[in-house]
Length: 172
Image (tube, rainbow, N blue to C red):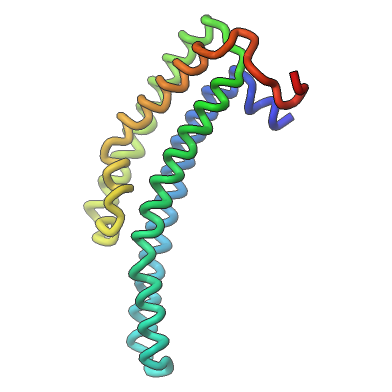
């Protein structure tokens, strides 16, 4: 049932909206985890219970967090985009869905504008967002990323074979 939904032509548009919100939520959680880890690190460094070596190890781990998760955020964005393209290729399509697809991409564009504005407001209010330059770039241009993902998904959806390609459920 789940695989049928993934390769269903109607589910393609839902996947784009889900991807937009999922990217935002996951990356936002990563940034707040970094903030919590930084505060815990400050408390541990002020503590006299830990050795200097332990404090250095914890400090190195917290300082490497933004580099790792900023790159991982870019990987998630590109991975979800490829997931949308693969699902679009395997979904049987009809040109009538093109009109619905354009409307939904426009709606998802509006949603991505709001999410980008939320990120910008949080960036201005919290200094720890500056530790994530890739995520900040993506969310400052989130509308463009969303439109590219949506329209490339629509193009692939209608460039694919009319029979819908390979169906993983039925094996045909």
